[in-house]
Length: 445
Image 1 (cartoon, rainbow, N blue to C red):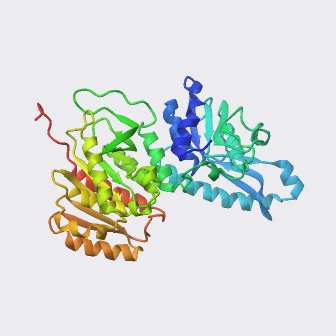
Image 2 (image 1 turned 90 degrees about the horizontal axis):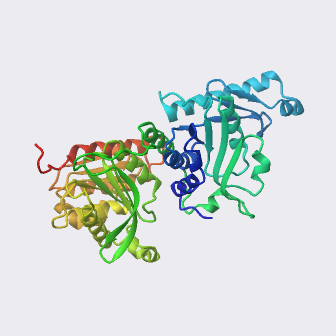
Image 3 (image 1 turned 30 degrees about the horizontal axis):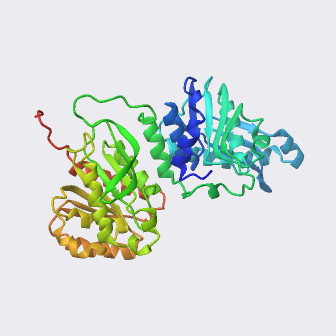
């Protein structure tokens, strides 16, 4: 079984766990990659989501061999047999424990902030990861969950080696796995997109869950568009493109994303930005700009005119969806997608309320830049020297609109450095919330 990405894996895994909906469940994701999977499971179960933070206490002269594990709130698990066998002294154990405890506390502060840990006492703890390799971290997580008072522990993963039950059977009350391939070698082989999950993405999942995003939203009254979060088929001229449309209960507008070359609607960075916008009350549409067949011709990936037309067509389709016709629309473009967004914003009757470019190549739409009238924010990494220079030149050509250049210190082109994507997402959020004011509706003052 192959998974498109961790979101896809989480939704498929959730179908095997729906029978737990009537139990007092807490879903626990292992950072980092397990958290997006766990978010989808928590959403399906309508259960609270938290991270399960564990640190292996490795033998000083053989760190890969665990002689214990640590969890939050002072949880300490010691494997007396290993300690005895390798002859580790109490002082040596304490040294390793102190170092790992410090890292555990740092991660807890980073991921959870000042939110309290979700209590496990007497509840069913569903420990989720994106897959099992050796199983050592998952074992520790199950042990820590039990030490925190969980009445029952379920370990659930999308993929694992055939012998995984023998490795972990004693640490969980139940083991759930979608696929145990005979020739298992690496978790990444079973994902189309297995790009690294960032700290910012983990935090976004936890914040969405804390805000109630994992529970089914009630219907809304009046003519406000309903809350929705679903896969859609976008009609773009003669082609049909996969997409994901998310609209909060009372949305101030909808932001349509244009991804960069070599990416898709499943871009983890764009999904993170979309989550930040959703939390601010903005709808989002992420969609594939090209069909699978079109992507095989690399020339299409850099055909900004074609990509801009797809964006225009997708916007027209969006405005035909029930309840969305009165909402303001903005564009968020990354890399080449930023050029497509700026180009599309100049099309007649586009009616685009704002544009944000992240690490964009606006120079690819140079001829159109003087025609842009939508307020435009250019966000560039301070360490992305070439693209920063291109954006400065492009800003000088944006003579017909309000515009601003935000430079994120220390960020390279993909905003992979800690905190940089978060800064870019917050800048986009502030720009869109400022410019995508709700459109007036009939019968309202």
